Structure formats: structure tokens, C-alpha cells
Length: 59
Image (cartoon, rainbow, N blue to C red; front, side):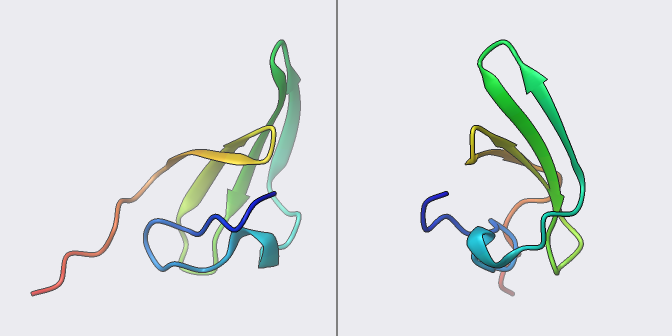
């Protein structure tokens, strides 16, 4: 895993627990992880591919 971070709170993905689910797919591995801020993250082969919530908008 690289130095990627959660798009919502900027928590380093390398510091997240291994909770969530993991599935083999044709291109490698698909992982779902829950960030400390509550956002679900989708990782494909360890790289961030999607998130359920985007960055916070500063007022």
C-alpha cells in the first residue's frame, strides 16, 4: 500500500485496521475498509479506487 489517504479525513490508509471484507477478483484483490471517520473505502490491489463520501467542504 502506498501513502494514500482517506479522501474525507486524510487518515493514512496504511494505519487502518484490516477489518472489512476482502475478495479475490479477476484483476487481483478487492478490499472494503472502514476509515476512522466512518467512510467506506474500496481498494483494488491495495490502491484506493473509491469512497462512499467525498472530501469535506470547508465553509
